[in-house]
Image 1 (cartoon, helix red, strand yellow):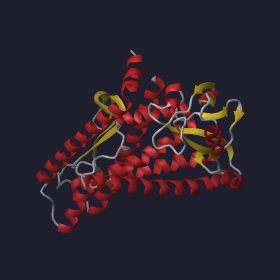
Image 2 (cartoon, one colour):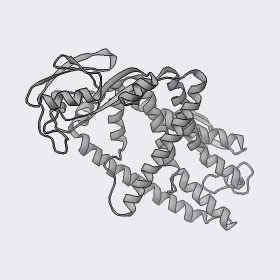
Image 3 (tube, one colour):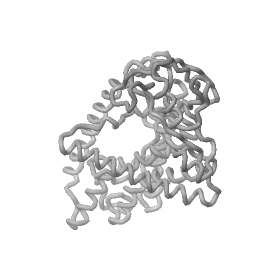
Image 4 (cartoon, one colour):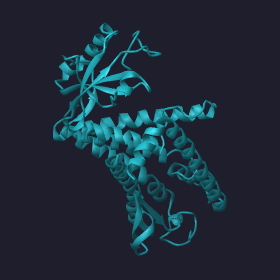
Length: 367
């Protein structure tokens, strides 16, 4: 659990720091004064007006002169700059997160990243390190009660080697009344065995099942030059899927269908971080890229207090051809920020209900 917390803080810190670094570099390049660029969040350990080192190691922040509309007549103020420069400064954080994802995926492909594959794709693309892994478990199901975890690689059932996803499904289907010894491998090469008796599970295609969702994975690698191209393709594909997912989320909220069950807050992300930590460095690398793209999309949503909301007000000002009422705009951003905090609180509460005692128990174990 301690390693999970350390990795979670490092990932979150890097993502936010890179985001704020984008704002910082673009503002400096545009001739806008940056009053403070902080690593971590206050309280401050030390630092002058521009650079500071702070106690809370969750990324960083940038304080730009004139970002809330003041000092409009001063040449080094954000609010004094033309539309093009202000638009670039506001979008720079999001662009840096996308760039980071591309960098992580591209370098990851050089060393190999895990991908979901079918048996036909394995033969066709000559992929290596093919595994049958547990992608998820039915809550309270026989496999979860026995101690199996997401990410476990299934090696054998009752001593019979399993090389394909279909082989696992067929074996369980033909041994529904028997106790099945599941041999698995975890990260760091740890091999374990668990005894699981198939049970009737609502929604399962079989009469009885172990309560696991399977995925067949392989390691996909490219050469140095091709990795950059494939990294760009993967970044664009993931970005589009995330945008569509958020569109569906916002559509459901607008229609009164509530928050999607798949939406996770800080607790949910921490739990997922723990899962990928157990699966190994390649999965952490890939997970960080995915979180970076999620952060980019979230930040550029046209909602007050977010970069996207500020960009929207900038566009409105451009269309109106005169400055917005800055006091009113600041009030709207403050309301938006409050609503975001409320949403985070609701999602965090749902995460605690979902992961409940397991998560709280792990926290208690640290003290």
